[in-house]
Amino acid sequence: MKMTFENSGELLIKASEENLYQNLIIQLNKDLKFANLDDEFEVSIPAEKLKRDLHELVFLLINEKFADYLNLLYIIDVPETKVKALDGNNVVKLSEDVAFLILKREWEKVWFKKKYS
Image (cartoon, rainbow, N blue to C red; front, side):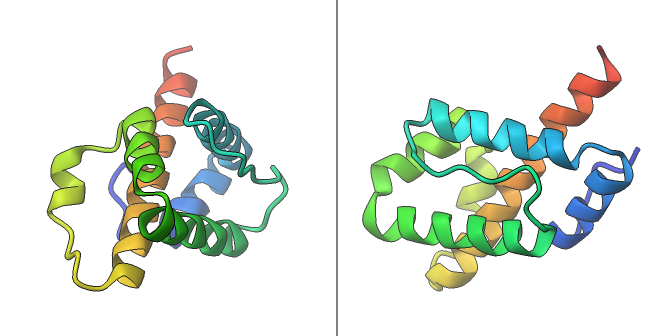
């Protein structure tokens, strides 16, 4: 089972191949709700739109609701070391990279849940 991905597109293709794409979105929605965010993704959302919309959400949180952004990372359990390793000079690129880290962490959760249940 592949757990290392170069980008969000690769990860989402793998999630679809493993029939875990909807589970990934359900997990993401659950964590958004735990983080007290009103955003929610349709389980039928196309992968490209999910990637774009999540990137946009992270961008808005970084720029307008930083405490909510930090809370979301905490709830999802994105490793702080990985976030700190990113280049923070370009917020657009940073938010894209953080969205990828979020998807990777959510993928790990659904993959492990499937494997060990």
